[in-house]
Image 1 (cartoon, rainbow, N blue to C red):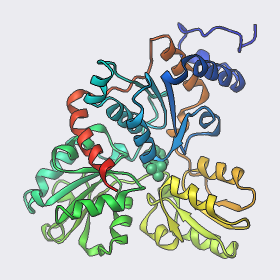
Image 2 (cartoon, rainbow, N blue to C red; image 1 turned 90 degrees about the vertical axis):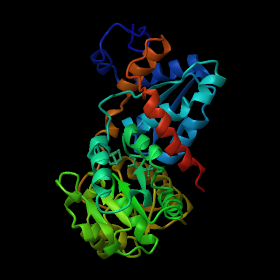
Image 3 (tube, helix red, strand yellow; image 1 turned 30 degrees about the vertical axis):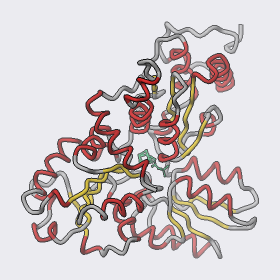
Image 4 (cartoon, rainbow, N blue to C red; image 1 turned 120 degrees about the vertical axis):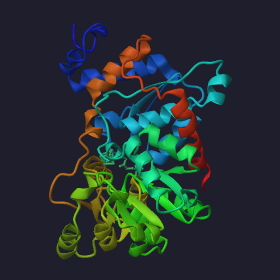
Length: 380
Ligand code: 13P
Ligand code: SF4
């Protein structure tokens, strides 16, 4: 009996799946998809490896995936091929109280194939730190005049904090529109956890650097700022970053410009301001894909974002020259944890009604997080 013919051994621990080759795993994943049909939706972020993306019903950036989860009323289960905060967001949006009521009380089960698929940036802001910062800020400025904005790359508890305090969630594709929304309401914004997306976006709005300060949550008082620095700031930037995008450096842009005449440098706004300033274009993963898709044959690109997406673009667009911006490998190790073995393991358990790695945000957190997420989804 080949591995493909073998019935799933659900009693076995995950390592049993490790022994299967990719073709066997792919076949078993497709078999679950066929049997579950529309009851199952597999969502995949653009940074997922090709073998995993091949099984996704829908591929997208963080914003598109949130929208997609919010719209999935009919399915019974979502397998999220991405990272933890994305699966949490899918659970919150797919299981809004009115949606659950419309389904007669049935929840959509959301699973993350590998629970170790986290996000180091999201881990840079903890709810206790944000609450302490809010209180500390209140000693020098009026927090009624501050909108907290959390990048979607954050724990559900931070989204709930924003929900409770008149704040909002943003993604890399709507950060500008979200900041416009926030500044229409209040004089200042507390932006967490990604300082780079916050700074890059605020700069496109003409906010000068001396009206921004960086809040180091490990400093005992005012994030390491003098009271006057906080008081003159319109944007208070949490000192967090993406360790993948931090690896792109301004000198990499200089090097590709010297070596590739006519190159267009296209980067993600999680890169530092120095890199974004030297680039030709900056935007979300979907924006990056659209730029390449729309470019004429013969265009030369150097792209600064996660390796798997750049490699896929390179394969899909042989009519263009596509290079990785950095000479060193910049890949998201946690996104990469989702592989065929974990996906197969998660799906086969899901199908038998004994799901593993279920992501379930508690009701109180979800109630407030959905407020902040719905504000984002309403921003045009
Ligand atoms: P987007 O796909 O929304 O651009 O986000 C990139 C990212 O880092 C996801 O973790
Ligand atoms: Fe987090 Fe960066 Fe990985 Fe995105 S690429 S999931 S921000 S560590």
